[in-house]
Length: 477
Ligand code: B12
Ligand code: SF4
Image (cartoon, rainbow, N blue to C red; front, side, top):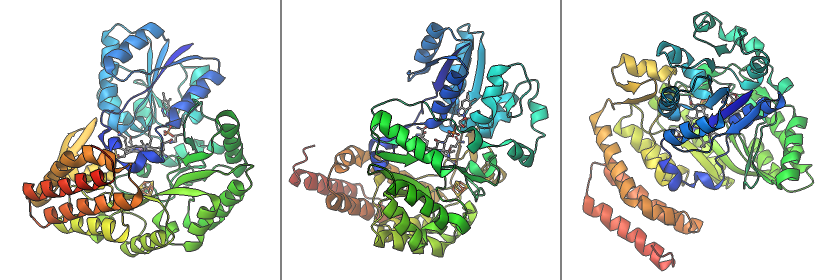
């Protein structure tokens, strides 16, 4: 069999141009690497797409002449994926089309309801389903829906599907390319909470016990392999929650520390942990000793009502305790803070930005306009639909703000971001102290906007101040 593998590009990646995120997390997506490796393990010839537009992708597919096109889709590339599938069929392609990835996990029923001209949609992980499909694509496989069996598949319960899940036993090391600064590794899958109203894990998580750790020996082998092949010493863990349930989080941190400290070379890693775990100083200390370089941490909100609406596992107090601890221990952070959601009030915005500036001492420009992405299949969608705030469709949902004042604040912050973002691209190359100085300027403008002062002159004045700082630092713009 010849397969053509597509990682659907994102249609919107504007923030990468000025966000500091990309310094530590590379754009490596291991889901496709795993799919590719499984196909090769079973003797399938795999071509991988490098194209960045639908027309190029169609041309590439035509010249690859595959029997099957396999596409990995995230919510943010769903519409593009739909366009590609339609264009491909229009171009005369008659082979198999197979959709997988997080969008498929969440929206597989929608794909059939809307009659996409595709043959298979995988809503479980590839390790669990793909080998059987390669052996016999005509078989009826739980986790791979077709237009004939999808209605039947909707009747499986989460519990039944979870019983199928055996990830550590069939772990597949993803296919890689050389030359990355950071390599992604998995140490676990799933999330022990799996209940946030906006997150995919709350309804697309089929992991047994909701979170499953990979045996530490497998993690070690993968790290050693990546070091030997590519000289890798920096790793980005792809786990939603590195440490799992809070009761065993310290134990897992100890295991990871023992692993990293026993490596024959010095390695560092970035990771996501829960706020609950981050309230525990001993856990943070253990991770720092293990080589933690950067922590992704989902505070999500510093506003009581919003935190409840998101159904996070931590409470407001936990957020402040964790923030204080992480700042005290000088942990580099990528804080998750979703300020704007359909129900945000002026106070929500204020509380979040105050938390960001005054407690986290974080001034990333992208945070000013951080708006909740509504993901198909999540509880938040249902709430917004009931309240008639929902716009768009399952391919890309948007919404109106319930409070028009919040809509105006968002618009003004967007306006400022637009004006300043080219300058900010220079700012991210400055040293930390200067970056903070620039951040304080952003904070000042944001504060004014929240307080209803929309002055173009003030914005221009502060932007000029920023330019002056850059010029005195010999960064010419
Ligand atoms: C690393 C990561 C990123 C990285 C890199 C992503 C990339 N380059 O693709 C960055 C930082 C860029 C990122 C950004 C975003 N991300 Co992100 N990210 C992740 C994270 C933490 C790990 C991804 C991963 O490696 N998973 C491990 C692999 C093994 O699992 P997998 O990807 O699901 O792949 C398996 C299956 O899906 C399946 N599969 C996948 N493809 C295919 C294809 C076929 C044909 C088949 C059969 C099977 C199959 O088999 C694979 C192997 O088991 C996930 C959470 C998670 N744990 O998955 C979130 C996640 C993918 N991200 C998510 C979101 C929402 C975002 C953002 C929109 C966040 C935001 N608001 O800005 C942006 C979108 C980027 C954009 N501009 O559009 C959501 C996706 C929601 C959705 N329904 O699509 C996730 C699931 C987080 C969550 N819990 O909700 N992300
Ligand atoms: S946001 Fe984080 S804690 Fe909440 S369900 Fe998703 S992965 Fe779990």
